[in-house]
Image 1 (cartoon, rainbow, N blue to C red):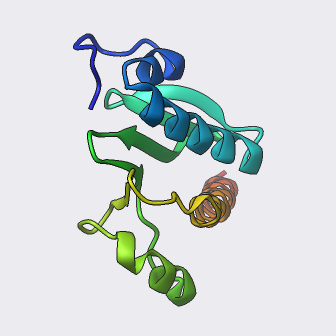
Image 2: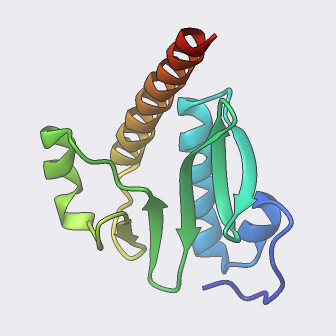
Length: 133
């Protein structure tokens, strides 16, 4: 849970609003995403850290008092669904308790899923644009 009440201006500001133990986890999530998608752009959307790729939202993450979350939870991939199952919270959220080891490998897989999806959608938009032209 953020200790600051004002809307964060950037991801550094967002993370700074948490206790040190949560800051460490959030920084590791940020680093995991950054390493997985070096071309992604950091921003704040819905007052939480967000990464964009090709001008489109890719993945969000957030901290809370007892857990951290990654959004959106991907669908479709059965193996990934099984791995995410213990952490699912609602249709679009993956929630990791902060008192247990955070599965950064799973976070990396979620991000990779969304990178592939982002690129697939970008190609589909480009193809559709060419067809219209």
